[in-house]
Image (cartoon, rainbow, N blue to C red; front, side, top):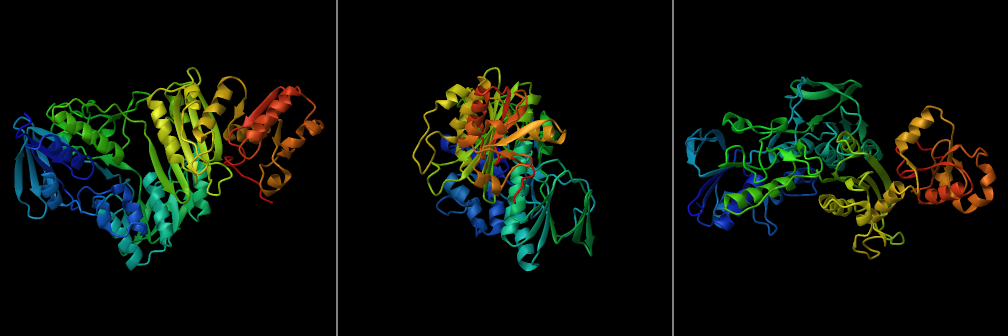
Length: 564
């Protein structure tokens, strides 16, 4: 059917343009029409926070090719041979007659489009919680170019100085940084006990502390009850923890898939109201495909159905759909939930399962917190990178990795995504032939170091304790001996409450300062717990029986620290 095939694509932001362009490359005689409700085509929605902050100066850069050509209807017609109907809304699908009915938003004119194959790339829309005041002036979302323009205008023309961000997910943290860079005082309100629920609690807490150090007020476990206004303009946000006066509000509480067209057409829906598709990206109608933020996905590890809308996934799915429409064989196997964002000086990235997700999926979980410089420590540009590794105790298989800090976490998470996809174990990861040169990596890459720590745990060479486990023991009054083996100078700069300092190099000579009872619970640590591990071996050799190494050391301790 390739020659003269009529393909209609509904949606022209991410998956839609990918499908259309790929089909034409493979079937030059096909007639491909994109129907797009909005004014802007094929734009980088993930770049909107950087347009708001001014890092991206011109909105056209978000919808341009790498050589600066704006991807508008003329571009798609002349370069891609794709007909784009902008500001045109698809209103219904006649599956038996293979027609799409649409309406020009500007004129009201109705049109019908015949198709041999139809692609739904309808994306998602911001979720607006059912609270009073969300329609007041100066309440924004950040989903499209128009939203970004509205926020920029508010900042420039009205000189907003106080902003409340409702929601602590990816969009929330990214726009928070953008607003701070424009001079705003920002309060983030998150209903859950932590921001960035894609991370485990202790990792998210460290990111939260970094945001607070940059002047952001973060309120977790806080519910927004109402948005107050005066004369139709936002004045304050009322929460379960009190009232916050503000000039503007940005709703960043996630998105919901746009699937009304699919539902009305009788297509089967999946988790969260997404469109159910197979690995070919076909819906339950074999002539209708779907891709992007509107479709159901599958977790590669658990095989559970899920919904993780990302632009990267949309583009991959679009290519798969186009290949299958063009008569080739292709499949999209699923996702790991890989994600990355910039939070001030931190790279925050993750892939696979968190500790909580892995436990809920039935795995016998072991974890490692491993902080270390992202380059050779003697290089002046080396920066701290904090990793959390999640593995299956029984098989030693990698299940997930989280990375935070000023160091290059993205490349470690990308490597971990490949390792998880290949089903690699800790032993295999610890022997990966990764690049090394001092300006780029330590001799033992951060990922390999974390895998080796995990091997030590799994093979019984050390017993770790997480910061949260230790804090619970401290709060319950358990009889513990906290041994900090850093230098005296390091100890005097910052320390964990209740810790005793015996520098590692003096430990053998000062064993008399350790509790005499060999059954005493001893938790050893240092800056990153490498010296702590060595101290634990010294104590074990001297007869102490209950030694635990604090995962992540002082660097990754997310609770109170004493700074004299």
